[in-house]
Image 1 (cartoon, rainbow, N blue to C red):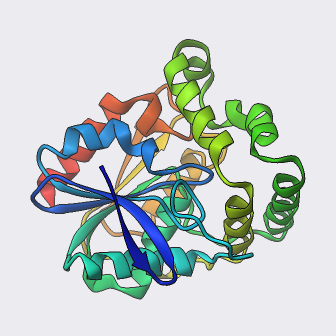
Image 2 (cartoon, helix red, strand yellow):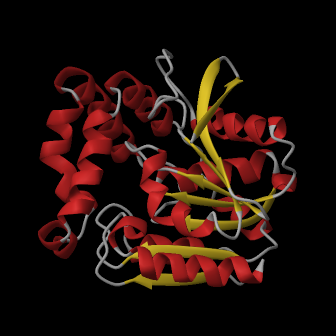
Image 3 (tube, rainbow, N blue to C red):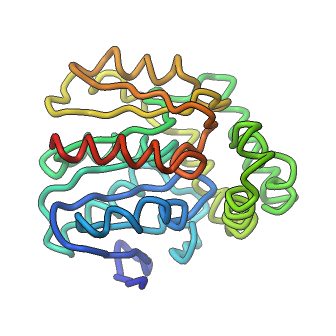
Length: 264
């Protein structure tokens, strides 16, 4: 059941489930908190889970024209403070991983552990910066349904797209149902994201890096770039998965996460 708190000018919607050590799940773009249903049903039995809809996504509506990743990180930091949570493991996928690193940069005392899935620690290149700006314009002009129809196959490996219709339908519903204005605001902010490569060597706790073996957006080489800069980081490559391994191969993803949580 969803809860809401007034956080930094908006009504932030989130789920607070289970008891025990806290795990915060941070979704990617253009998704919402339901992408973590495949994990929350399992881990709510052993942990306290905080699963927010990020500003501009799901039920956390915003009217801002640009939302920086710093702002999304601060929303979660403020939320944890309101809930009197002083330590948590952060699990972030894609943009969610970038937000998790931003939380670590801003409030390292809050972070007990990091799981970085299908993400990149680096800033945009000159080319990808312009591409993200152009995408924002297209989303506003054409809408999320058009974007979803044209691009959903890029988020999943071919096997998932061909054989797991329930995953395709769930992903399609999330993407097409995202508020275009909210997605645009975050796209514009994400274009301005900082390079976190320099802080990776400061991390002094166990880190798990996960990537789908067929991820078209953040391939295995990108995950290896992060692993090489975090002392002792573990890298797990999930077979038969694209950019959404937590949805495409939830059993593999959940076992990796369970083993990691048992360590931290």
